[in-house]
Image 1 (cartoon, rainbow, N blue to C red):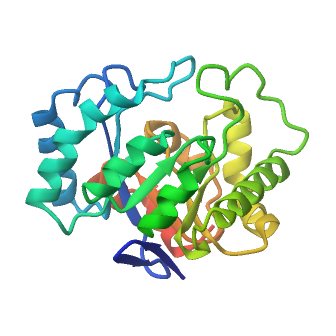
Image 2 (tube, helix red, strand yellow):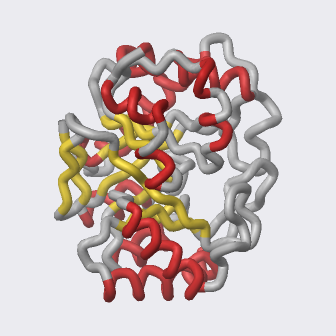
Length: 267
């Protein structure tokens, strides 16, 4: 199985692929404020690449519960110096831009980004066209509402079915906009519009999610604060549910038994 991201194609049948996350924000819930300075963000990106990150995901808008949208010009003001420096120094690095805004995505792709990580799953009507024209990778995430209001209603009749229905509809929207299916990855949205219990249930039922989607697509589990997962590792039954892209510090992820087992698809 592959995930195509412009001129880069990930073969996902082997090992876990690691996505390192750097938030160029003052208020993100994991590293907010630590890398708002472009020089610090650039240095952190180089550290993650040295540790073995396969993808660098750069965000300039916090999506923590209750957060408000950041104007596109402000997002670009934060992102542009980091993207420009990385593209110049490490043109082979696979850069992902975390944005809901098509104009930000378009500018990032013009500066060498290969992936758009859209937590709103194409809420911007222009996003699919931007991604399709670039041939970029696209991450579609499940979330109820927006970061501002997503935690107001976290009750589900059947969380797996509802997430699958949402992602299936957004995949159809992406394809209608010209995005190739092999460019699409799914993020079930752990912690986004879900209670802790709901997130754990979704993790435990990821095999069902793949079955519901009726296709073994690339599945991305992004947990910005990996301590949430690691603290529960001894209570999680890791099963074979498809291909995995884990995120966090590459060194810690690759050495963690939970991730090692998930890569092998064992229980």
